[in-house]
Image 1: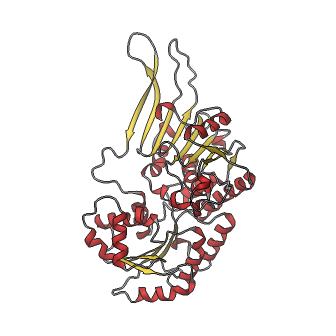
Image 2 (image 1 turned 180 degrees about the vertical axis):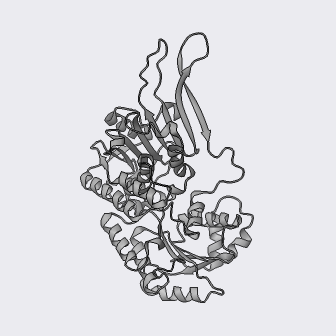
Image 3 (image 1 turned 45 degrees about the horizontal axis):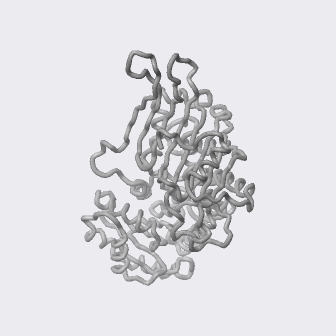
Length: 457
């Protein structure tokens, strides 16, 4: 197998892709005969590139000396279509036969059509040869028009089953667990609707600034970088109808049905952290948002007028991601103690797990009600390391399993929502925030409720 990474000098390769490939190798999940070709513009020998990669990687890699023999570097300007014949000759001149070929595009979206078209034109990926696959990092496109153009270019030349659009969020254990929690438990599925649920919050908060990604991020912002993919994917899993079966396409049909019925309210808050305009690669007086808080509804009988809140931002106090489902008040009244609303917390990061908050009797003679919790830690009892999201997804590409990858109509529906939001937003200036509490207080003023549950913060 040949696994080729375009954009190999970027952080994604160092932090995620090479460690994931190493771990698959360590667990003996890689084919016996494989090479990883790393492509970048900078001048390196393979040895120098591998040494630099290792210096940047944190952690222990006991079989690194054996693994690194599978790594190669090829210098080329992948934005120049005339450079691809030389790359093709490099591949063909490798000793041994590598018919299974995976091309991983870890580049900015604007390079996607250039690379894909060049690979197709020089016949490195051909229609209906399912041993040849192309993998796109999120976001797929920069808006609906560009995403449609990319997709049309691909499907005129190759088959949909050869295209893998990756969203690493879908590789996370608790995202995969949402469907199990919902559909394998009568106690949840019977009350998973507007009659019982008051609101749903989905959040992904980051402590980091844009760092070295300013040039990319300023053309993207939080809407395109996080909401269009990670948060919408999570939303569709939480809100979808039961599929007709566990078939991959039946599940995706229901996810698309959710996105097609999304109605975004006017209560959207855009924020930008103080100092963003001074970051490298940021345009002067940029109005790009680094924070989004949006309130939306899903116009289906199940979710009639139930608010969903999606929140994401940079330079927050804690890195965390999860889902908070708040149930409606109990109808009974008690002499002492006020029952708190039941809540289900699905924790995605840093801890993966489930917490159910409910009410019970406080210890003692008096009939006081008090909140109680059932707490499940997903990985606490796992022996050894749990697979990281990229390990799972790369393994699925190798084994031709597309169940955790995004289908085209999911992307099309999500971009349609984002484009409408951007058009409505126009050039309005975001709220400048110096801290998480500042921007969350703005959300709370608009929404008339706290963004995070204090007991779980």
